[in-house]
Amino acid sequence: MIEVKNLHKTFKVGKNVVKALDGLSFTAKDGEITGILGPNGAGKTTCLRTLYGLLTADQGSVVIDGIQVAESPLEARSRLGIFPDKFGLYERLSAYEQIDYFASIHGMQGDVKKQAIEQVLIDLEMQELAHRKTLGFSQGQRMKVTLAQALVHQPKNFVLDEPTRGLDVMSTRILRNYLAKHRDNGHCILFSSHVMQEVAALCDRVIIVADGKLAAEGTPQELCDLAGEKLLEDAFVKLIGSDEGVAA
Amino acid sequence: MNQFKALLLKEYKEAFRDKRALMVAMMMAVMAPVMIFALSKTMIKELVETPPIYVKVSGAEFAPKLIKQFKDENILLFADVPSEDKNLWHERNIEITIPETFAKDMIAGETIDIVLRTDYSDKAMNAPLRRIKDEIRNYARSIGYKRLLVRGVDIRLLKPVNLIEQNTALPSSNAMFISMMLGLYLLMAAFMSGLSVAIDSSAGERERNVLEMLLCQPVSTLKIVLAKLVGASTIAIIGVVLTLVLTSFSVGFVDLTKIGATFSLDAFTIAALIILLIPICFFASALQLFVSFQAKSFKEAQSTVSMIIMLPAMIPVALMFIDDKPKWLDWLPVSGQSLLMEDLFKGLPVDWFLVMATSLVTIAITIALVVILSIRLKSEKVVLALS
Image (cartoon, rainbow over all chains, first blue to last red):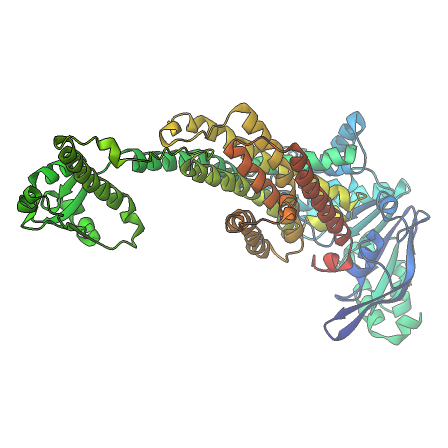
C-alpha cells in the first residue's frame, strides 16, 4: 500500500519559485490498480520521485507498506517495482543480463533468481529477446526490458510511469493482463497514463492531479458522474479546469 | 556483498565490452615501449657514434696534416657535403680559417691563430664544436710534445697534475632522462587508461538515462560509486602493468650500457613500481568519476576530465625545477610517487616508509572523494539535473 500524505514541494528556478506539490494526498490500496492522471506539469513526476525517495518533501510524507520513505528510503525502495519516467538501457548488456543485474540488486540469487527471470520473460512474452544485446532494440522492446527489470523481484507495489507509451497493441494487451493478474494477487499498482481509454479499462480507481493538488478521486464511472460527462476524457478536462472539481 | 558483486560484475562487463575504451588503455601500453626503444636508440647513436661534420675551411691547402686528422675523425670539408645535407650544414655555417703563413710559422715555432667561427648559442652545435676543438687541441698538443721530445725534455713536465674524473652519478644523465620519461609515462598511463571507462560509467550513464533508474533501486550510493571506482581502476591497473611488462621487454633490445646507463627493469623494480602506482590508479579514477558525475553531459565530462590529465604531466616536470624540495611533496599523491620513482630509477634503495606514507595519503584522499561523491549523488541537485 502506498500512502501519500499532504506533500508540499517547491523548487527555486533562478529567481522564480515553482510550487510543484501543494498538499497532495492519496492512497493506492493493495489489490487495486490506481491510475494517476494529470496534465503536463501537474506534479506527477515530482510526486513519484518523492515516492522513490529521490526528492525530499518540504512537508508531508510518503509511506509504503508502513515504511516512511524519508526515514528508510532503501527499505521502502525494496518494496517497489519502478518503471520511471525516463529510462535507458545498458547497451553493452543483453536483455537477460540487465534483468539479472536488477534482480541481484534486489538481493535475489541462485535458482530463485534464475526462476524469477525465466518467469518474467515468459509473462511479458520476451524469451526471444532475452539473449540479444539491447543496442538497436525498438522502443517497444526497450520498454519490455525496463518493465521486466522493474518487476522481476515480484515487488508488492508497482509504480509505473506511462508504461504503455510506444508499445504495440499486442504488447499493451500482454501488459494489461499482467497487471490485472497481479492486482488479483493482491499487489498494489500505481499507474500513470495519458491514454484515457486505457485508464478507464484498467484502473479501479483514478486520482486526478492538477497544480500539485488532488483535483478529484474515484472510480472512472464516479468521475464521469461527478463531471456529468459520458467519457472519462471529457470528465478529466472538466475536472482539472473547474473549481468544482477541486472542491469535490 | 551480493549487491556489490552484481554492481561490480556489471561494470566489468560493460568495460571489457567497450572496445573503444579498451583500445585507449592498450594504446598507452603499446606506445610506451616503442617510445622508450626509439628514444634510447637515438640517444646511443648521438652519444656513441661520430656523425660527419662539414666545415667551411678557408686555407685548407696550407695545413694538409691538420685536414687529414680532421678527416680521420669524420670532420669533413664543406665541399664534400652530400646534396641532401647541404642546406643544413650551410645554415650551421661552421667556419675555420687557416692562415696562409701556417707552414712558415710552424717551422719558425710561432703561435698560429686558427679562427673557429659559428653561432655558439645553438645547442645543436655543442657536440660538433666539442669535437672540432678537441681535434685542434690534440693536433697542437702532439706537435708541442714532439718539439719538447726532440729537445730532450720529458713531456710529463707539462702535466704536473693529472685530473682523473670519476662520475658517480647513478646512472648517467642520459639514462636518467629515459627513466624520467618512463616515470612520467607510467603516471600518464595510470591517469589515461581508465579514463574512458570512468567517464562512460558516470556521465555516459547519466546521458543514457540509466542513472536515475539505478538511483531508484534499494542500493546505497556508496556501493554504486565504489563499484564504478573499482571497475575503472582495474582497467587503469591493467594499463600500467602492461606498459611495464612491454617496456621491460623492449628495453632488453637496447644496450643502454653504451651510454653508461645502469637502467634496468628487473622483477624487483617492476614490483616496486606496481606497488607505487596502484594507489595512483584508484586516485585517478576517483578524481575522474568525481568530476564527470557532476558534469551535465558526456561532452562536458570529457573536456573537464582532460584537464585532470595535465596533473601527472605537470607535477613531475614542475618538480624538476624545484631544487630545494619541501618535505611535504614526498607525501602528496603524484609528486610523492614521482619522487620515489626517480630514486628507484637512480638505483637508490627504496624508502619503504615513504612508499607507505604517500600511498596512505593517496588512499585517504581517494576515500574522501568517494564519500563526498556518494553523498552528492543523494542530493536533490543531482536528481533534478537528471531531466
